[in-house]
Length: 113
View 1 (cartoon, one colour):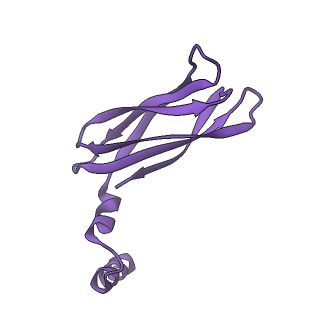
View 2 (cartoon, rainbow, N blue to C red; view 1 turned 90 degrees about the vertical axis):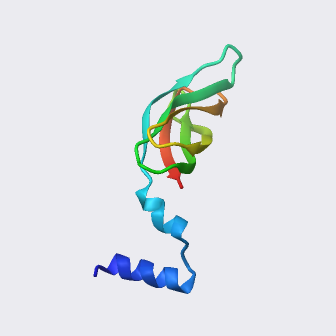
């Protein structure tokens, strides 16, 4: 029996982990291409792209988080968006509000449960 399974079994038995936590690693999501879309009004931009549930179970909540940069490469903020109840095989188009003078974005985190 491997060490990870022993630790998980012990945590479940002690109530330190829930079955939802245990199945979290079974969740598969994939972020496709994304880009910064500029609005006609200055400072009202958004990061748009897609996230797909490539697993075989429903994803209760998925969240994407981005670090935002200006034209000189300075960090100017963060942006995020989330979706609920993403079915297996379903793709979601996110629109993360990116306030300020944003030229590019970098994906920093994807959370799914």
